[in-house]
Image (cartoon, rainbow, N blue to C red; front, side):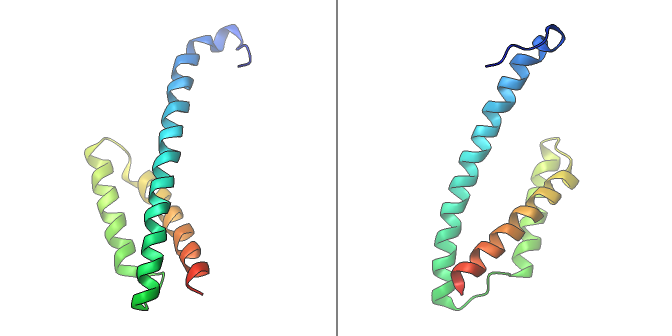
Length: 97
């Protein structure tokens, strides 16, 4: 780890904590992608589209409400999840043909 300038040393423990949280987020994303792979298999069998608008809005509503109860700005969560969902829809579309 590079040596930090003296005026940044007090940030080191917080940066380490953020790095640990980021690693946990990546692990959760990996779990989510594994579930998405199963969703793709079901959608193939059932002939369902990757993009299901009502499901997208349901997910956004749920995560926004959850964010609010945890003191996280819902607009941040909505922006992040819409990006995530857009990526997942493209991922599913590639696999659904």
